[in-house]
Figure 1 (cartoon, helix red, strand yellow):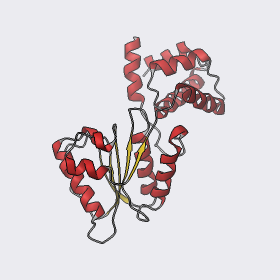
Figure 2 (tube, rainbow, N blue to C red):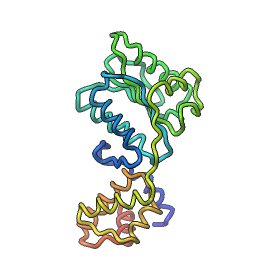
Figure 3 (cartoon, rainbow, N blue to C red):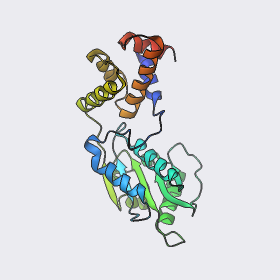
Length: 233
C-alpha cells in the first residue's frame, strides 16, 4: 500500500468507539468541556445557546456527539443536523435540545431549517426554551450564512477550540499506550503523528486497532506491523 493510500485510510478511521467526555482529552479546551458537561446534565436549567468553533481535528463533532450520548442516556429527544442531512425535518416540540454541526457548510435549505429550529427552540410553544448547541469552523461573525442565522449563532456562549499540540498528542498517546501495556517507540509515534490525522479520537482508535492487531499476530508494535495492519483492512 502506498503512503498516499495510508493517508486516505487515516481519514476514514474516525471515531468507531462512542464519543464521550471521558475519552476526550480536554487539554486547552477544559473550559468548553466543563460548560458542555454542566449544560448536558440539565439542558433546560439555563438554555443559553452555545457555539463551538475551531479548525478540523479540534474536537467539535466529538463533543457534540458526547452531548447527544448523555442526553440519550437521560431519555431526551434531540434534533440534530449536519451538512450531510440534505432534507432536514421541521422543528419537533418533543426535542429537548437542538444540535447544529458543520454550520459553515449549510446550504440555503439547511440554513432556512436551522433558523427555524433556532427560533422555535428559544420560543417553544410550551414556554420552556430549548438549548441550542452549534459548531462551525470559524467564529459566528465570520460565517458565510444568512444574517439572521449568523447573528443568532453568536448570541450566547462562544468557545474557540484549540487543536492539541504535537507535544500534547505525544503525551496522551504515551499515557494511553502505557495503560494498555503497549510500548510505542519514538519511531512509531513519529509515523502516527505525521501520516495520520492528529484528531485525538482518531489516534485513540488507531491505537486500539494497533493493540488488537499486535495481540492477534503476537508481534511487537512497529512501523512494519502498522503498515501490515493497514494493508489487511
